[in-house]
Image (spheres, chains in turn cyan, purple):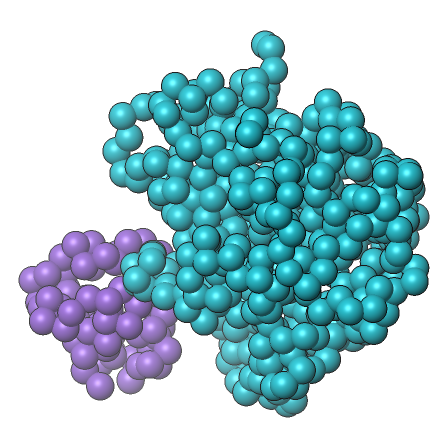
Length: 416
Length: 78
């Protein structure tokens, strides 16, 4: 079967700012941070960390109480994002006119239903009880979000979850892209979600010494990728979804097409669990460019993985220089995690959406709080402070995970 | 707490069911209690009333049947 072109026809996201997707992107273009200081009532020692929450997410209003009762927070965020993307694509829920038996879902989550499991642990070991809720398994399972989405949207094709740490949803999107491109599925709903505010999870990240610290005043500026004074990553909860659709089908039904997804590259550093290697990232970048038939000269924007860790940021810049050579110095790059934080298994999908919107609106969001570039991160054209409006033909979104798993997605703008 | 009160509280909290709909002849399925929610509801009864429900217990169909069954088990086991 000949390869199909793949259109992005729907986008959905639970915004930490509380508004809709357009509001989210407008705030990022303006360099606004969604990071806030989080203080919990956990025992024995409350969490006191910069974090990105979705306080405006009305679970009952969005999903209804009965459905929400059968979901962990990660599945709630994911299913709600999927509903938004579905509606954005002009697709109906309920009884559809067309056969959806080979439409599918590919979802990313690093943690799955960690909050549900943690609740069970607290019952057992904190309260001394002998048993946990009967729903614990279905709340906690990693494929809960994609299962709920398939059921709610009536999709009879593949329903799969990808757990690849911080690259989870980039890989889910890439795998969904391949299914549509091959003709196996005319439509795929894809994306990712995570809720890492579980006490044990946050403490585990703290123990790795990669988390930025902050207080009420400093938390909004806590995540400073590529900056000389960067101090680590900021975790966040989130859910984001995209509708990938056979191009001819999308055109035939008159769907709005945001951009085309054209390439997907993966690799493994195969060297260390947490220390990234430029060589591995270069392989993923080249694979995405090759897969998409994109010469480096056509790439006008890179949405970096850029988490603001000491080791990660310089290696990513080295990888970009390795791929783009002399052109790297005029290659626009930004790390939007400086504003929306790191949603782990949802990060790749959030950043894919940002990259798609950048192409669609021909405007690049900045790396916020970047005043003095780390010497080891010099060599690319860092977009700082505020939006940059310029013609954008194609763009890449990088996701580089613990474990050395790398994923790069390539998108092309519609002809302007 | 009475059995009916517990059912009402559970259905309001978990499924958003209005209290006045939880009457004796109401079908539990029509109130949104599927097989998973039935497990949760039985778990709640065991927890709150200190009773033990057999694994092969036949699921009641109506609110009234549930109340009667729970009242019977409470009087047998407590």
